[in-house]
Every structure is written in structure tokens, then in C-alpha cells.
Image (tube, rainbow, N blue to C red; front, top):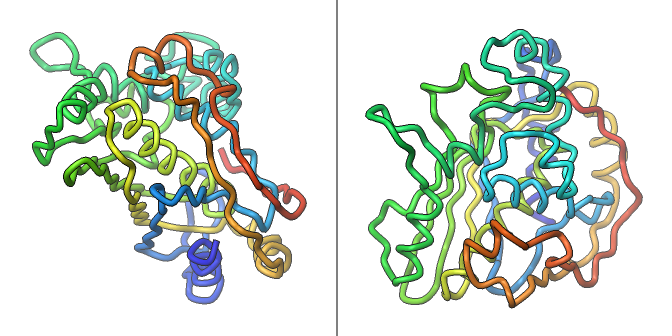
Length: 283
């Protein structure tokens, strides 16, 4: 919580105003932020100065790992975050690549599980790195990337948290995640949860110990209609201790994630928090 709150204060105190063309709003912005998560110690980075809905964040991550490209599939596993981008984004609604209601296009998990090769066929990045890490292999390229500029026009949104690099030291697995843009009041805790869970889950299915997760953010910002709630409400609250995350130990493989894993396989212990804050969301 300290590093999260320090980043929020840094933006409020040192940020510069930037006009965001996509949303038509101004953002108070800083460049370069880094957060680290102790996955080995199971210090789950769940925000305690407001209620955080961790289940939707894990459900979204599961959808990415399954390679989903449809908001209806995300809703079915407990995540509603793609409804607006799939169905209310005017540019995407008028895009000839859109297949109809709820279609997201070639974004996030599609790239991770089926990156199109120029000579035909697809690359399953996730399967490659899971296979390598399961065999104790780290070729310094155990990378899961959702960032494919050649297909930006075929999806409803460019990825924000776009690349995850796994590093194996002995039998301990570490993760470095890169994010180009971060809505700190709303999106950051989703991203924190997903970085933590991604390392914990991949370590478990590859038979390795989880180490630390390093979360690197390029552009961290607070929208102008979020600033008052952050400055005058959330930053005045005292944080609670970090809770713990428990993952069903029966999850042993990537196939398990693809076929039967649900939100019921994740539980959080000891979560204390202040009441929810309804931050505006910008599409």
C-alpha cells in the first residue's frame, strides 16, 4: 500500500496536465513509475483505502490466458470490464473488422495465444513459455506480449499492460511486467492484482517457486474528474495490512486454466478496507 499511495501523492503533487485526445479529458500525469510485489511472501497488493473488486481483475486475467476475444465470454467468467470498449467505442463500432456485438477484435489474449505469423499460422506465446519453464528452461525470451502494432486496427483497444517477461533463477520464478498507460485511481489495482496472480499462477503450473513481480509503468495518470476524490478522500484514509491470496493447488497445467478453472479457485484471506469510491471511468 505504501508504494501505491506514494505514487498517488507523486501524481497529485508533481504531475503535469496532459490533454487526452481519445477521451477529451485532461490527465494529471507523471512518467516512469515502478512497483514491486512480494509474491513469495504472499503479500497480495489489494488496495485497502477503498474497496477493491479483486474477482473481476482475476476473471479478466483468466480471459486473457484463455485467449478470449468477446466481451460475452468475459462476462460469463465474472468480468464486465470489456463491455464498454466492445460496444460503446464509436471508432470500434464503425470499424469494418468488428464482427458484431461484444466482439473485441484481436486484442490482449488473442495476441498471447494466437499471434498471427506473416507466412501463415499462429504463435502461442503462452504455451511456449509454460513448456520452457516447466522444464527449467529460461532462454531470456520467456515473454508474453500483447503489443502487435500490425493489428491495432483490428481491435477495440491497444493494450495498456502489454508485455510480461518471466525470469527463472534456479527454481524461483520472477516476473517483470510493462505498462504503457495507467489510470491510477481505477485501473492500477486491477493491474497490480493481475501481475501478482500471473506470477503466482504460472509458477504453480510450471512447478516453480514464485519470487518477486516487478511492475513498470510509463505513463501514470489521474483524470481531471477523478482528482478531487483521490486527493480529498482516498489519500486521507489510513491503509490496512495486506491480505493473502490462495489459489487452488489442484491447478497443475495450462490445460487446467483453459478447461475448468474459475473464480471459485481463488480466495482472499484477511481483506480489510474502507468503503468503495465511485471513480468516473473514461472510455
